[in-house]
Structure formats: structure tokens, C-alpha cells
Length: 235
Ligand SMILES: Cc1ncc(COP(=O)(O)OP(=O)(O)O)c(N)n1
Ligand SMILES: Cc1nc(C(=O)O)sc1CCOP(=O)(O)O
Ligand SMILES: [Mg+2]
Image (cartoon, rainbow, N blue to C red; front, side, top):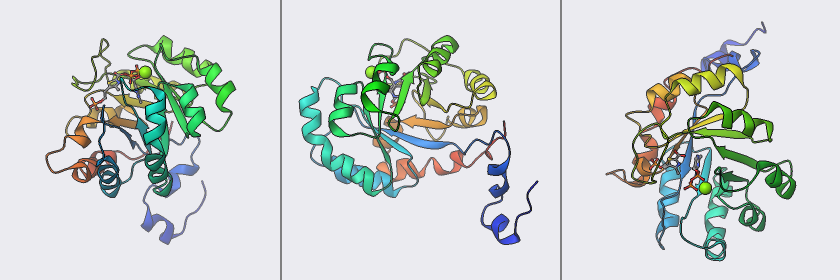
């Protein structure tokens, strides 16, 4: 075991953990856009980012074609870059390539992660929806995904969901695999603790931030405590 200075340990009591084999960083927030946006969205997004640490932002605009999304994406993408937040495009490998996005999120009907890798290259993050299926998650990992997403953990009005996942799938995944996992679906600051405790690497959240009664800044800030509720587990 390495020796650490008092200063290092005072700044972060878990500083030493990252040198342990199997270290897993603490759970982080993955913000999903509202299903539709208007002219004021950039200010809303800036406010959300002011609320606390956001690791990734996914542009998920359903029912709008890729050309329209490409037209409105640049200022959003620039804000993400300025705030050091990964900019992830939902559904479309082609749009992710056209925009030079940091990542693409693929559902089971949205394309093959292998094609995405071929078209987007080694540096782009590829995420795959795996519902509540261990099999789909292992397939996604084998296909070269950078993260797997399980859900829906709770009821949500953001999307019609056909699958319900239990926190135990996160525990199973994190015990066996290094690949990060995302928990999605109706996640709020109030119900997220079992997901964090089970080992989720990311909480993917839309409504809890955009519909927070005190605005998106408060929506992001509300997650700070639950994200910090568990030290990074060695595995
Ligand atoms: C992080 C994350 N996880 C899951 C989804 C859902 O993707 P998909 O099943 O393709 O459904 P749509 O989002 O396309 O309606 C996601 N977008 N992001
Ligand atoms: C986009 C999406 N995918 C889901 C899945 O289960 O795969 S649930 C979901 C909606 C996430 O939004 P909210 O945080 O408002 O519930
Ligand atoms: Mg999709």
C-alpha cells in the first residue's frame, strides 16, 4: 500500500482508493435533455451545469429529424465543451459523426455498436440500452460499448418503458465487469440511493432536473448528497 501525505488525505479521504486494484470512480450525473427544447434552453442548460458536477449531457430530441437537430446542436455542444461535459447524441450514429460528438447512445433498434465504432473511431463513447437484461449487457460489452444502460428503475413519464430493472442488476454487473453502467428511468434525488449503493457508475436523469420546482440548477444540486453517499467501492 502506498503512503499518502496528510495533505492528500485531508483533501480527499478516498484519495488512496484510486490506487487500489479494481478502483471504480464515484457515481456521476448523466443529464438527458428534455424531450423537446425551445429558445431558452441554452440558459436552462447553463443553469443546470451551475448546479453541480455533470459528467455527460445527452441530446435526446424525439420526433425531430437529424437535420433539425444538427441545426440547433452547435451552441449546446459548445456549452458542453466549455463546461467539460461530454456531449452525447441519442439514436443516430450519422448525426454523432456529423456533429463530432463525444459519444452516441444506441437503443436496441438504433444500430450496432460495432458499426458505430467503425464510423466514429476509438475515442467516441458508445452507450447501449440493455433494459433489464444481463444478456444484452454482455453482448453490448463484447460489441465494444463504453457503457451499458439499465432501466427503467422507476416509473417515468419521459418515455414509455416496457422493461423494469432492479438495483441488483447493477450490483451483479459491477461485481463482474469493469465497464461502467448507467441507471436510468424515473431517477430522482429522493429515490437514487439504492442505485448508488448497488454500484451505478452514472445516474441518467431528465425530468428530475428539468421539472424541478426550483429550476434546473436546484435539480442538479439536489443530487450532490446522494452521489456522495457512498465511497467509491473497490472491486
Ligand atoms: C443513458 C441512456 N440509457 C437509455 C436510453 C434509452 O435509449 P432507447 O432505448 O434507444 O430509447 P430512446 O431514448 O431512444 O427513446 C437513453 N436514451 N440513454
Ligand atoms: C430515455 C429513457 N430511457 C429509459 C430506459 O429505461 O431505457 S427511461 C428513459 C427516460 C429517462 O427520463 P427520466 O429521468 O425523466 O425518467
Ligand atoms: Mg434510441
